[in-house]
Length: 243
Image (cartoon, rainbow, N blue to C red):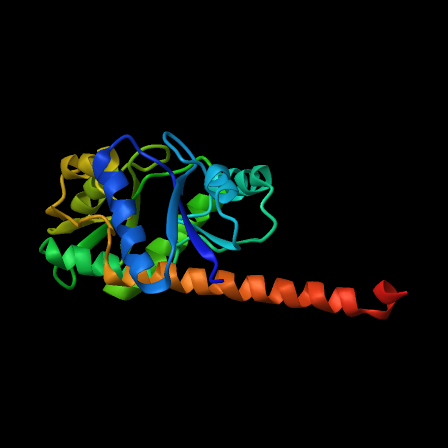
């Protein structure tokens, strides 16, 4: 039986964010089969609840753009709490060059042109691992757009997006655009319109390349499950186990 894909997101009270994750799951499900959604915060169901209701093998795909606390702590804890016997967890969606290219597409839709300055806008994190991954993602965007990129944060970290835009203006950059490193519209994305830029790219959203990326992670998880099954079979057939 094909493993169930469990798409794990943060959770939000904003209906547009919930709708976006549901639409992403639907687009993935149309290509790979059963796809279920779980949330680690704000609303349910939790990953543990979904896994307890999943009798077959499962592949958990964290729908996060960096691997901070939720990926390193919440997701493993939820899987342990589920007591599910056959689960593979994949890498988070970001950072990845695919996301950088989607951000360039969103910027172009907002009026960005080659050579215009860019502020990479992320939510922020108190986890240094996530901040390091934001820097990697910003470097990927710089490579894809072929212009230097400044990082700005919407919530937790500094500099703020507004400060990053102001710094570029002060340095003589006439046109400055904000690239949204967010999955869906909501409070954080809405704040970007007040940063003083010439335009704001839409969130990553249900872009065809994002659907492909989720499916790629899922297939990595299937391979992991297969490798684990082969290791278990080899261990059971070893001379030490047969004695």
